[in-house]
Length: 114
Length: 115
Image 1 (cartoon, chains in turn yellow, brown):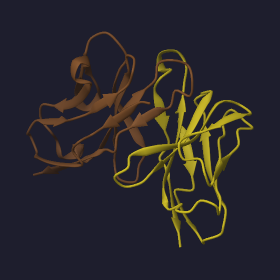
Image 2: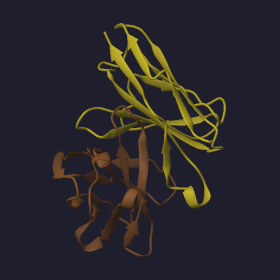
Image 3: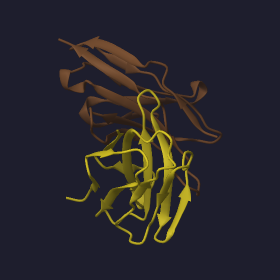
């Protein structure tokens, strides 16, 4: 079945370390998104990419970086510059046609800074 | 800029009772509206969506929502809640035009179901 795979499910990081969260989709979707979720704040957009080799900052991009070298993959790096990285991170993709405005989500990755 | 307000942070209902979760949005044009559900530690699953046409939309798991333009609302309803409906519910609005076409989410409503 087609879907979005995020890994790892849980990740622990020491302060000062960079970590990379993986997001892979086999839905043949062009657009991909990264959201951050904190309790009581809903989801906030970090970065998005509408096509391979192109990506744009979202609302809270500081301290994060991404790449989009392949259509299927959109990894997110949480850098040491991110002041409060402990959160739940969700990757999503968007298709075309009748599903053009619907986001499909992965199961998420929980990052904890020790 | 678009925004979504879910005024109820936490709601508790008895199993078998009816449910209504409130959602108000702010957007300059006709919005694309969504309800997603999230179980603890999981991703978001689409319950239903409104793009145009009939303002009462049906979704999965027996949920429905009604778009009311005059009230800028898109409330989610279910006639009889089941224990398995306990989860967090997010309302979202999307832009229909070109651009990033990301969704803007409300802060969520956590539903607890009492036996």
